[in-house]
Image (cartoon, rainbow, N blue to C red; front, side, top):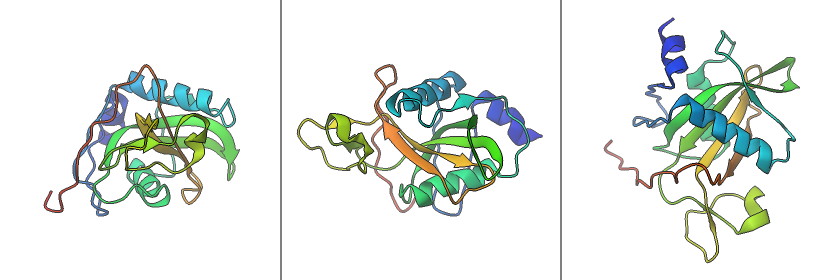
Length: 167
């Protein structure tokens, strides 16, 4: 299966009707670093572990759409990296798509412990610059993604880009 081979390489090209045309990726090991940082930030509740790619009832394309729509990321959002992870059982399955994206604009959150608040596109004083934004989408319940974001000291910042309606 062609998509499976590409997903294993960490390259997942997508053209989705919701306005995602451009895409960017990080190597597969970066997915592991982001998932590890999400686990640490959430103090292991919930906790996710990478699993090998396998056939699941939800396509990656549908999972990306769910993150963009339900996590409020908006038009022009680019896929950074994605892969299957195991987590708490939802709708009878412990499998999720971990989908990390780069929405247009700046990526800041309020200082320190307020990371659970919605990301801000402004640059407030003492704000935390986010370097991962995304969600964990249950493969049997795509309408219930766990949206998350944070800053991992071992990852580069997300590139800042502005969505142009012509691209």
